[in-house]
Image 1 (cartoon, one colour):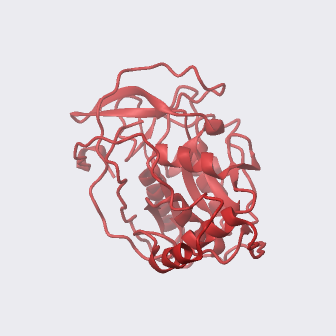
Image 2 (cartoon, one colour):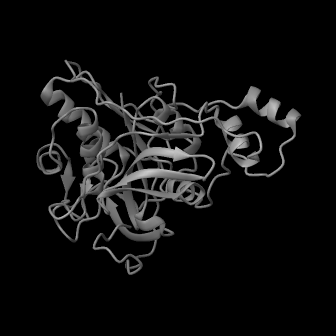
Image 3 (cartoon, helix red, strand yellow):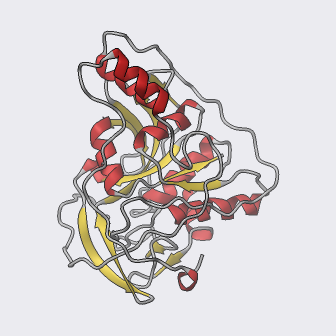
Length: 321
């Protein structure tokens, strides 16, 4: 998708994290739980795996420049304000033969009735298990792609699905890019992942990159962006689908930083933006497991904190099915 063909309506995004569907109260009335079980549903593009309807692209507004000195890593990740409800868009479909999927390792256990927090969370999400983890092999973005967390996360998922693809090949041959100050980060990577002074990109760019790769190898798989509540992502894990998610480096609080005027629109980057692969969750311990390309390993983060950072980055995720 080219910058010139993209239109972005103007709106303001609230930075306040949304109220999460998972109840955290220690006391749950049986009547209330019964009502919650009967009424909670997934939003468009959720764990049902269906194709979401296209909507308008989130808007962007100007913010004052603030240099990024909070992150110890080289990535000067900084982002655009947009509408409160991040939009769901279809990625381009490609057809052809796909290789067989890699084996998944799911561990499940029933939630204890005496664990009110986990039980309440499962009631809200409809999960049948309290833990689930996929056997994803982590990849590091370093040293070749110091700012390539997004495309490295994509390479991680593609390798899990049975594609023998290198992160640098994806970055050099399939990732749309434009110079810093000229790139719409919903359509192109800002800079080049190989450069220390590059920034990054948002979910539509990674969906486009994946679909370009699938077209080149004749695959029937499709990557698509989803913008759903955090709890809806766990259903993908249960079905064996890792999720590429946007959050922040080391779960740091994010803030608005550099602003660029792209095709007459002010677009502001949020720092320290980061992209990872969600591969598991543990309801009793309230943690999520991710493949973090900055660390080059599988690690765990506090579930509630991760949800907060996910919301700050506009509930962006990409799934491949």
